[in-house]
Image (cartoon, rainbow, N blue to C red; front, side, top):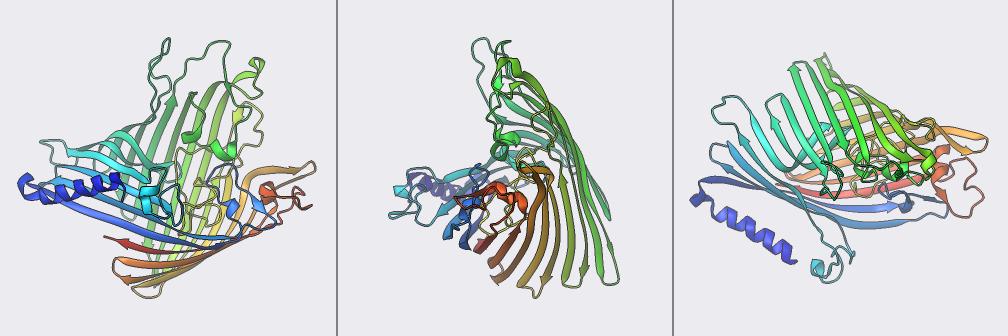
Length: 470
């Protein structure tokens, strides 16, 4: 057992034992997820936005296992007006991985830390206010919209039952000699208002993200080697960078009972615009310019419940950049997301840290995703589902000198989950992609079929999970 983990366990035990003396309430919760990559024939494709994702004509078959264990403690005053949360995770610790401490001898042999702080914040109610009016300070969950920003971050948030205003800082830099206040800091101001009028729910939100940089007349940020597959997302833009982005949107849902169950609609619409200043696309001073950023995302679910069955059609469109070499960036850009709509292209399988991308788009090509899913609650303990997806990029991708395409492919997903106990669940899933022509962009090797403008390599993945929550 590592020294850090011993200290964490000691702190948790001390807090629990000190409960009577401190007149406070303590709760400890956990989510202990053991996952198994049963088989994939294209491990190189699941590179996690690394820019190295490839499809190999010779196949790259692999299997493996990992744990993703999360625990958190909540220390609250008896009246609940003040509480603190500390949560940590041992994440993606693979069986046999010496680098993360999963090899012989356990975590004490690891060459890198495997404990991640997930949450560490204080939350308190404003005194003498009868309704909810609270501040939350520290490392906390941040949710503007699931397609724009939903992840943990450091910030300060004021919230009520239906409104919040927050400031978050994603990157921090000390001001150097000759620098300006805010140079190198990536900040955001966020606001959201949720209106609930059953059967309609509507959310309005806005998020302004900016980073400052003092740039001399003869200087610029080089974007000639910018890799959109890796870095076309706010959290991975090159830094420091003079940058600003404003996103505004509306989301919500509607449902109504019917004679056979209920029907429902969910929606998201986001429009964003901003600017990236003092950059060069050819690494020359003559090419120094500003880039205007404009993009949008639309999403809708239309579905119905039929007793134990739910049928849902999903369509999501994120805009792409038709001409990435001009002065406009018209591809939609997120801040930090974890999308699970697709098991092949996103995190929609049990081993969700082995993924192609966590974004609602690919490259700066955007994404048009259409999905028909059937989920069935067979018993109180067992449910399963199947889905068919047709995926395209939003803009044409130049594959050869004479051929363009938008087709990513047709995907089939299936899963089954069963509760052995109320808090212990096992699951199994499968996913298969019949590749479209755009997938030729990811093919590698010496085969004559690589680079011919045709998608010649399909993808299969299967994973399983044993998950204990308390």
